Every structure is written in structure tokens, then in C-alpha cells.
Length: 536
Image 1: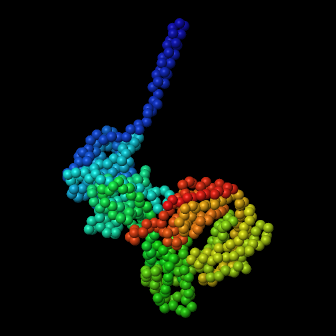
Image 2 (image 1 turned 45 degrees about the horizontal axis):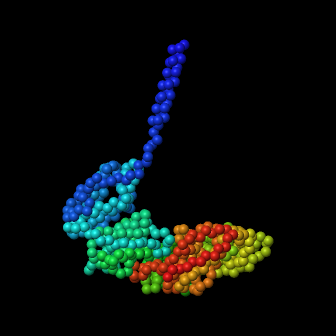
């Protein structure tokens, strides 16, 4: 019995020891590695001169890998044949740069890796590493600094390329469409400031692109652009250049039309279409007529004609100001579209909002005696209509009261389209809320140079409400949905009532835009007075 007791006590002690050892030995994971990799050596050394090779090796104290190098790597000046950076898909203790381009003599080259070099385990970045070498006897050390902002949007684009073009005998305004720049940098994703480094003394043109396909060339429909109007001389006296990035309005361009339904031809276009005129050059009967409406979703003008023609083709002259195009459209026996009528809004309606009916075929007439608006107490509501021929939309204007239901009915033959089609019976229901469901803002603009366009936008810059201001007076934005708004003012320099973007070839900068400093927290049932003092 005594031996059994001793054995039991010994067994308990052993278990306790092992348990304590196990507790002490439980892995805690340790502290997270936050130390970025460091370079042990480079062959050739960074900032080497008289460079003649075609391969560079950069060694690190731990395994590294490349992350988002297609966005992060900037080579300045750009190379016609891109250098090869390896390895890309695996980790290694060194990076190899293979150069295939013919290097320019007496030129300083810089490989700016941004944040693309990270360690293999925790992806700690080796921030803004630059490898620099010169094919000449010295390293160019001058720089150009500045800031990028979007001309219209509040948030500036990321990864904007900022470029210098040497202003020599070969430079002209179209160079940016055809050639890579002399020097380039990128704002990456962390700042709107830029610095173009290792620049040699000279005269340059300063440009910037939000480069849609990363080819270092400007394409109007794809890229945003910014430009400094005058040549800059390097070195400068600590100059800091501010550039405004904008999207150019596309130059007008008509595309080849085609018959898409019976007596309906789709004319595609780019740019401003509002002054487009159509003329039929083919022989047509005396009762020939036509109508044009804008497609609601695409850059297309739909041309409708009547009567049906027994011809193989129609020849059109399409004119937009000084631009004239001639098109031949093949005609065949297609089925006509059926009349489709859409309404807006579809459920709730605000007190200052119109009810709208639009159609896919141009309306010919409206019979208001066949359309009624009735509120919930079964009394008829008087209304007026306004027709927009380009959008093919009737707007119904009528007085509305709080928490009321409205039923709108259009009997057959109320709407007649271009081809004499009519509607079936149409019924719509709308409801208003209490006025306390909305937010109201009175905006007072101080120190303004009129005229001004005053806009409320969402975070993405979409215009939710807009007013035109020609003199100093309060502006009332009423019945707004309760949510966040951004207030901006467009300086309408040419008094045309719309924001005008810039034009690079014409040397026109975009119209000035100022944003109110605070986000407007629109609260239901709340009326707010906002004073926005503009800077000179």
C-alpha cells in the first residue's frame, strides 16, 4: 500500500511538471515582423556613372517579392523596349533588371519601384526605392516639384503620371499623342504631390496624364490630362507647379449609321450632338417626314422616317457646325418597334418633382382629355404639360400635398406616336411623404464673381441638385433626401450655364471649381443655412 501511494504521488508530480512545461512552451506567435527588407549590395552600385551594361542585380537581407509592379514601377526616362524585372511570381534574395533598350548617351536613368518590393512573409514594403545610374560621367540631380488635383471632382485620381517633354526643335503640341516623355514620375496611391528627380538642366513642357492604358501617350477618350501652359526652365527658383487634371469633351465624330428597325436608323456619335442636322440627299416622296430623338442610354440619335420606302438605300448628309459627313444606309424590310411608354418616378414623388412619360418612338400628339390625375379623395388635380422633343418626354406639372396618393390614368389614344401607334390604358400610382421627411438647405454665396453654377453632389461627384446664380441672393435647395451632400461652385466664365472642361490643343484650362470645406449632413426635418465664402 505504501509503495502504491508513493507511485501515485510520483505520477501526479510528473503530470504537473509536464503540464507546467507545456504551458510554458505554448507558442504565442511572437511579435509580428514589421521591419522592411534592406539592401546588402547592388551590382553595379546605385548611382553609378558611365554605365554600359544591360543587367543590374539588387541583393537583400531576406527573401523579397514583387507586388503590383505594373502599377508601381516607373522608369524615367521611359524606355522604348521595357526592361525585364525578375522574379515576378516567386520570392528571391535578389532582383534582376535586364535592359533591352538602347540607352541614350549622357543620360541619367531612374527605376522608381514605389512600394512594389515587399518581404516574403509579412509583405513589409521597401518604400520608394530608386535605382539610379548615368550613361555619362555624372548623375543629373535637378528636380521639378508640384501638386496634382482634379479640376471637377473632389478626390484626386491615384497613379497619375507626371511628365516632362524636352522643348527642342522636334517638340510640338501633338508630341504627347505620339511620343513618350523625356522624364516621368507617378503620384502612386498615397499623395497628390509629385517630384520628378534626376533631371538635367534645360527647358521643358510639363504635362500629366491619368493614363488609361499605361502607354505614356494621350488618348482623348481614354485619359485625363493636365498641362502647364508655359515652358519651364530647370533649374528654377524653388518653383512649385500646380496642375488640374480634367477629362476633355470628346471632339464630335459621327459613326456609320445603320437601319435597326423598320423606318428607324441609328446614328452613333461622339462628343456634342446638339447641333447635328440631317438632310436626305436621296429622292423621297413629297409626304416624306422624319423625327429624331436621343437614345436614353447610348450616344445615339435615332432617326425615324415615314412613309415606308421601296428603295435599296438612303443617302444622308449629316452636319454639325463645320463638320459634314455623307453616309449611305442600306434599307431593308424590317419590323417596326412597338410603342413602349415609361414613367418616372415610379412610386414616391417629391413636392417639386414632375411626373414624366417618355416613349421609344417620337410622340406626335397628346390628348389631355384622356389623361387624368386623381388624388386620394377622388378629386381631379389640374395639370400642365411640357414636351421635350429630343428626349421625347412629357413632363406633368401639378400641385402636391403631404401624405397624399395620386393615381394617373391615360386612356387609349391619349398618346399618338410618329407611326400613328397609340397607347393601351396606362395606370400609375404615386405617393407623397410628409414635408418633415426631407432636408432643406439655404445656401448663401459670399465673395462670388457671377455667374456661378451652385451644385449639390454625392461623394462620387454626381450632381443631385443644381442652381444658376447671376447675383448675390440666397439659394433654396428644397425637399432633399436625408443623406450626405457635397457643395461645389463652378465659375461659369463664358456664361453658357454649364461646366466647361479644358482643351489641351487649344490651350484652354477647365473652368474653376471650388468645394465647400465640410460635408453637409442632410437630416430629415431639418432646415439649414450654409454660408460659402469663395476665395479670390
